[in-house]
Amino acid sequence: MNRNVMITCALTGAGDTVGRSEHVPVTPEQIAESGIAAARAGATIVHIHVRDPESGKGSRDVALYREVVERIRASDVDVVINTTAGMGGDLVLDPHQPTSFLDGTDLVSGVDRLPHVEELLPDICTLDCGSLNFGEGSLVYVSTPDMLREGAKKIQELGVRCEMEIFDTGHLWFAKQLVEEGLIDAPAMYQLCMGIPYGAPADPLTLAAMVKQLPADAVWASFALGPMQMPWVAQSVLLGGHVRVGLEDNLYLSRGVKATNAQLVERARTIVESMGAKVATPDEGREILQLKARSR
Image (cartoon, rainbow, N blue to C red):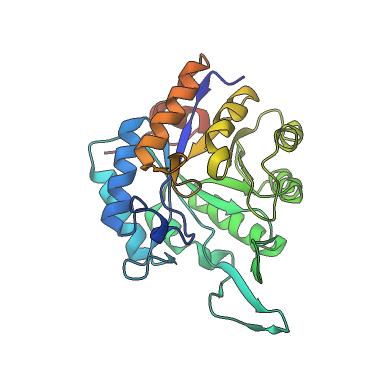
């Protein structure tokens, strides 16, 4: 069991959730304010996507990331900043003419997914460690070994900690390969992402099997979607990991009761502390992850 638990709050994601809850933050100001509230509630880390303020859809616009990060850094809260670097991997195929790409395709190289990371130098950024049939329809998330090696090398050169996002068992296999090749600095950080169709299911035995395959010195967390989000907090802590909650992955506190990010962090904190563990402060998170001290 883990006794000093980092809570990551994934603030907004890029999914089609804006119309499903009024609490999903869209504008940079809303995303930043939601992150600040999550930090006040006890989040060690905030995980940041940005959205187009007009459409609400996920975006790679560096200016939007800049505003969110600058607002959080200028606030009176301390929190570890983790930006996604997963945008730019969406390939929507015509199932009858698969060499034709449909609306919704946003596919760029591994390095071209990183300009906001290069400019803003967050504490952490993500690396989605494999391709995936992403839900129903014809959307494929594309992240090839060549793209991943190129992206990991760039992140390493920037001095940013890489959080390797693992959506299936093969992704974990390749993530360990990146570590063996020296493309991921120690301590290697793994995020086990469960229940995303069609990756690893949100099944306790699957999680336990994946945890057993992690290197002994790995820093790892896991999460699951929807109603499994809070049970997964307990699962992760019991197996020795850290946790992630937030509106990217779940919109509800309970059936029919919509949540805010701060409320989800508070609920996770209650679970962690009820298990006899404590929630890591941002400074303790930096120590766990061997990050640079916060500068003001």
